View 1 (cartoon, one colour):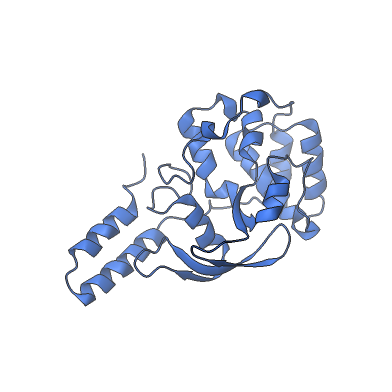
View 2: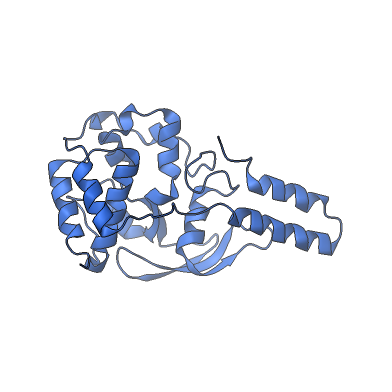
Length: 236
């Protein structure tokens, strides 16, 4: 059974029907409450180190397939809210959901609680603190931890278009990160790229493995070895 119709659409109706200042304030509060109803992460995600190690041991190991047929458009519209993935159908585009989840010192829009006006990101990949301001040039981008191209080679080539759209917009798959580091990472797999901040290797491998397990994606032999090494940095 799908989620209800986009929640912000309901909120918009409330806003339009309010004729007085007090009505508008109540409608805005209702909009914020409606947006807040949709979780921005799955329960138990990312998995613990122990769970991730078990998951990694169960993943199919094979060399990537169909790499030459990958195109970004195979994963549908950028930042679509029209999915049943985590964060979907709350009326906010996916990128705004990621910012609302990952930034601190967050300031959201008064009329539209989806809009992030400002905040600060503690970049997980580098440890840098990066400011964010609405409609200004930013050093923050949204990264697919297991890149779309890597997902394609690991099995997404066989999915339905809707399944690929859900993957591309699943908040469990996404992180707000430093722009230049995201460029450096590109579509590299775990054996070709690791976060510069070694203290993040454990969580990165937990997230990466959790995504692979959630979507039934395969790993290559070098990719599995790299994930084992990073999971080995997790506290006992």
